Image (cartoon, rainbow, N blue to C red; front, side, top):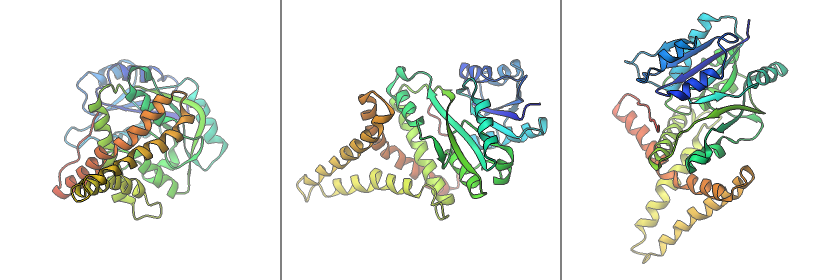
Length: 327
């Protein structure tokens, strides 16, 4: 029997989900697909491929963390023998040979709780936004603080950490990895192709909404764990408050008494973008993409700050959390 089970999650992913599930083998590994209220027959298509399907209760707010948890629970019921679980988003395709390489890495060191590899964009040539994602996915090999949505986890490590927190709207992988590390496990990124992601992001509005979700995640993560020794997302929250609100507010507020000279302070954003550009050059041979990445990181501070405000406003009002979808 295979030691690896798979949990795929999705919502209206269509053909992307088909490619995801077809990159896996139900005969070799038990697979559970968790559907978050799709209206495109995703669940039926998954069943036709021989995959176990879990349909989430529509009366409870959707989050990726909740979907992963419920998929993991079903997997333990249907395949209690598994030692490792591969999580994958429905818009990703698992690379050939990845599961074997990741399993070997986990076997090599008993204290590794999570293994991840290189995620790539399927169509980076279709838009600058897709290329920005491809650069973002290129992170250093070695011990890491967290993984993304695609990773092979040791079942014992995930159970010891208490699984995913279903209340976390975004960056749920960072949050669960924090608790896995607290439990004494390590996160390892290996030099291997892991998955192919299809962001399908071709419009500015999508980029904006994704940045808003990022800001929401920083705010929620810092609220939950910011006072812990890990100071989770406190730096990120501080930066987006500074660059997304305080600096532009001060520069604009002092424009009249300074006869407009204070507006020159916006050059700080260009300097920060240049710093990110120089750091990013080693990730891509296309200087234009590196420059766009630097500009994007700084421009995103405004929608990220709005995402922070959205988190605190939602909490103050006592509203239910809602997915922030950019597709």
